[in-house]
Length: 505
Ligand code: SF4
Image (cartoon, rainbow, N blue to C red; front, side, top):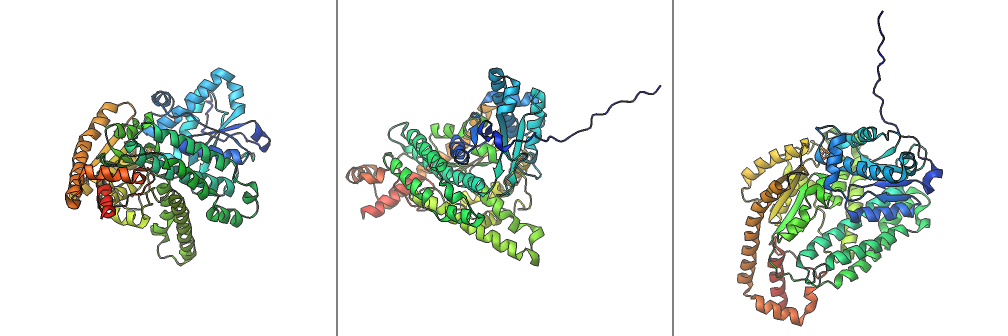
C-alpha cells in the first residue's frame, strides 16, 4: 500500500498581534546602533508611551550564538545582531521562563527589500527564534523608507509621524554629538573628560526627547512636521549641551592622522566588539577618527529615487522629484541647524550628487546593495577635499555589496595611488590580522600628518613655543568648542597652526 507523506510547507513568519492594551506591560526591544543613538531613541519611545529598551551592546559571545543558529553563509552583521537578540532572550528565559518572555517582549528592527541580506534580517531572526523554541516571540519590521506605516498587527505600535520624526531627529542629534566626541577625545587634556561630558549630554538629551510636548504631536501631519522642522526646542537643547563641552580643554598641537571610517552600514556605525572596537583602537594608536553619521545613509535613501534610471525623463515623476528635492533641502536645513547649535563643529553632510559623480566612473549608482556607490564616493570625497589622511573601510565577511566596492576601489587606487586606503575585513574572530593591516597604513598616515604640521609651521614661521605662549594669553583657543577652520590640510594640528598664525598677525 502506498504511504502518503505529510509535507510541511514553508510558512512565512507572522507575529501574533501586539495590542494597544499591551503597551503598558510589553517592552519593545531594539538595537543595532550606538548606545548614544539608542538612548535618544528610547527617549522618543518613552515620550509616546511605549516601554522600550535597547539590547545590550554587541559582544564576541553574540557572534558565537548567532553562528550556532542561523545559516552558515550569513554576513557578519546578520550573525552578530541575531546572536545579540538570542543571547538576551536566553538570559531572560533563564530568569523569567519562556512564557513570560514571549508575553513581556517584542522586538522591533529595521527592514527593507533589496539585493543584500539586509532585506532578510528578519528571516535570520525567525530562524534563530525557531532554534530557541520561541517561534511565538513577536518581531516587527520598521520599513526604513516610510515615515507613516500605520499600526502594526494588533495596533500596539503605531509607526506614524510623531514616532518616525522623533526617531530621525534623535538620530541626527546623536550624530552631531558623536562628531563632537570624536574630534575632542584625542586632544583632551584631562583623560576621560570627553566620555563624561558625552554621557551627561546624552542623558540630558534623552530627557529632552522624553519630554517632547504632546500638544505638538497631535493634529494634522503637516502641523507635526512643521513643528519638528521649525521649532527651537531641539536647537536650544543642543546649545545647552554645547555649554558642557565648553569646559573641556584640548591640546590641538598633538599631531594626529585623521582616519575616515567608511564601510557597511552596521559595521561602520557600531562601537564595540562587532568591529574590533576599531574606532577606540585607532584613537589609542594616536589617530583622530571621523565617524560615519547615520544622517548620510538617510540622505542617500532620500536622494536615491531621483537618480533612478526608471524615473529619468518620465513626465509623471516630475512632481515626485520636486517633492523629494524639497524634502532634501528641509533635511539639510534641519541638520545644519543642529550643527550650528553646536558651533558648526560637526562635519557638514556631503552632497549626494557629488558622491554619485565621484563614484560614477567606478561604481554605478543603480547598484543598490549595502551602501551602494557611497563607499567609493566617500573615499574620493575625503581624499579630494583633504578631509582625512586615510580611509578605513570596514567590510563584513561574506558581504556581496562590499566585495564589489573593494573591487571597484582597486580601480580607484590605480588612478589615485596616493589615496591611503585600508579595507579591513571583519569576521569577528580575526582581530589581530585586521588591526595589523590597518596599522601598516596608519604608519604612512602618521608620517603625512607630521609632514603637514611641519609645512604649516614653516609657512607661517611659527614655533610650538610661540603658540604655547599665545594659548596662555588666550585660553579660549583651547576650548573643545573653539572652531578651527579648514585651511586645506587634512590634519587638525596643521590647520590649528594656520589659524593661529592669522589670529596672531
Ligand atoms: S550590506 Fe552586506 S553586511 Fe550589510 S546586510 Fe547587506 S549583505 Fe549583510
